[in-house]
Length: 336
Image (cartoon, rainbow, N blue to C red; front, side, top):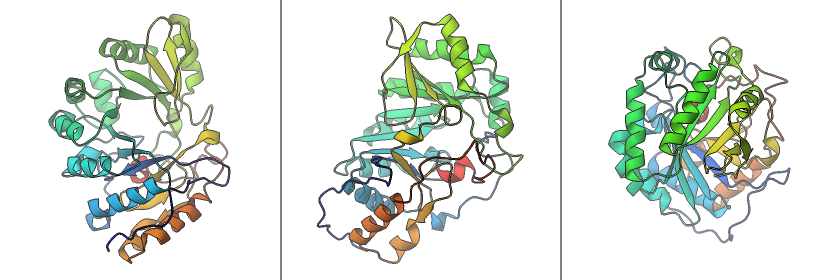
């Protein structure tokens, strides 16, 4: 269907708790070439059928509508987004949408070496790379056989191309050694990468997630402060990290603490899965299925209203602590 021109003038998208929604995390695939146990368990094959994926045209239309509702930040996620064919064509299209001021990418970097230049040309400037250890053996265990050298090579190529900032996302688990997260910190200092430590979340099928690997980042932060002089830093993006800076340097360390110190009161984001399901909260089941509306020929104005109505239902907060088994979606199905 052809886009219909809206008579509205950038209406703000605000939920019932007064939080402006300015950030969409968009999954372009639920597939991945790694099998990190806390995201997509080994042997998992229940992927969405490609016919149910939003097409690039449909994605462009949805993001244009979100832009007209005040959304300025888009992050492409997966699964692993770089396994979606011709992704740079989509980034070029999205970066041209009026009102989108920040287009970024989350990736495991295994395919980044080959695609970095095209993605940069297509409008991506900031990337987040998942990397939980610099120990080759442990990396292979976490990722189901992944090769650490591919990620390090992809990161080096990204730096050469000009991505900045490059953020390293490290999930800290119960069996993560102190030397692991200290070594990651030193690696990021040497390469001028921003480091963010992340707590595991109790998502996924019981027995096949990271529930028993939870480690509070409060203890990690305390241990780091014994060695490094950490002072409050500046939030460098639209996400939930609380940043600290090593005194006397510009190096930033972020702590993402959805369990020990949740950030729901400042949540400014929603997620769209590869099949067009709009999830209003990572830790709740509230959702709106956009694909059936798009393929039934909904007008832009009605699509806007459907999104506004859905965002009005966005819950105040997750309930990971109170109901740890409530959400059974895998992270790869939700969209990062």
